[in-house]
Length: 444
Image (cartoon, rainbow, N blue to C red):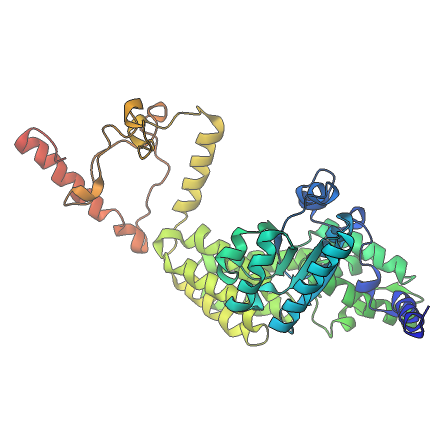
């Protein structure tokens, strides 16, 4: 054994006992993974592919702290593949070429295939991503790319088409609480129920953020309270940026924010938004609620509201606090000032009820796909009337299955833009009726 090996072994030992808590608790097998059970739990798709040695290139898309790096490592180990790591933040074309050449040598010398874990894959420019294409396509490299950004926007279409996209979810409260228990055991500490709830609420689904806060809180607890983490330890560990009011008050304030905006009170909306942020609430949590509200409570009365809310959510990810407060405030004021309609919400509920309660009607023949050979012989598309052929842009034609009768799901409200959204169709219907009265037949 060389001196370099001895030093490396000693460094690994020290890191295993003194490294960051998040690193020390990193799962050693897929069975140890907390969360993402839909992918790596028993029978999960990614787990099966890895254990059957059929893992192909994948893109892992999920929020920070959802386990992308951990999964990449464990999937490579479960597949018995050699793992290479690169970060798109620091790596360049030279680094990629070196990995490709090493993979080719490794395959020739030992028949071992290579997994390249590329963190922040969206940070690679087009030419850098294109450099990976031949190696991924021929199977020389199995790519595991990780990104927090929407890969449909940030990853080249050719590379995305050669990979399978898997969505990772933010960890839920149960998974986070389980991580807290593991962390407390590793730090030889305990915690009050209130402190655990505060840690879970403040982490916003981010396992790494949770364990980082817990590590500081346990250090304070050992110095102050014989190793018992209380709410003061958690608050100090986050420099006061926590939910001081507890979980119940937290959700009460979130409810007050939504109801204030729904009630068109921008002042109250701003007040509750600031209360949440000052208590340490994640801006991502607020942004998500605003995006939901834009469709649920504003909807078609002001369709631009969804664009504003979604832009605010993306800006929060891009700039973070404290500047993101301005973006959130603008979204709150816009949503509160917009006319309100819940017609989309009620229409969705009605359509869902109709589908789930049946009947499971077939697609009417005139609406079926008529583009393939032999379709017309089956009656597909026969009788379909193309709305663009009519000067009004609308024709009187049935689209719902006959089994549903004249059932209506969407009923426009009279508020905002929605109050006039169907004016053009009503005019077309009147014109059609007049055409029948005058000429005996509606326009085709």
